[in-house]
Image (cartoon, rainbow, N blue to C red):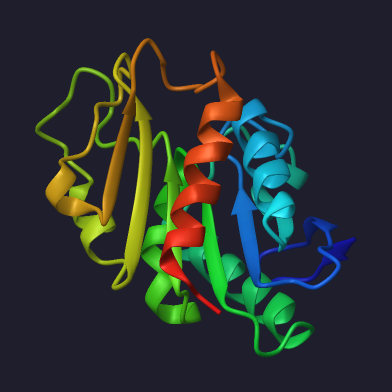
Length: 198
């Protein structure tokens, strides 16, 4: 379904759990979509533990833009999307996340939307070859527990364990986390069960 935001429509694909224990809202990276292998694996794993999963195509992607543009506008659109989803599912714990740029959005907006936890897949710690331009502050500003899953061959770097509630570094994985996406889903589901959000 398409959802209006202050910066154009977003598209939301929802997979409903029969008796949901939580709402997980996920989004894509700057160049990908919500059908990325790791996002689909997370969806399947979270559905299996009783989570309703909403995958969001952000407005910039629906417009056909190759880059997200302004972080402020991206975050404003995200907050609007999540508010609408929460309104239709009152009382459910909210977990939000995404891969790469989507992980940054989820961390930056976690406090604003009142997220109970954040899942950051392939968090891009810095631009490739530019470690001095660290984005670790975005992880720290989430204000809630963050699970980070990165590959040890990610050219965007790997965050420090101190900046997340849990850091999982997968051997042999790059930025796309597509060698063993099922493992990514398993790590997410296991962590969410440990959090005991309900």
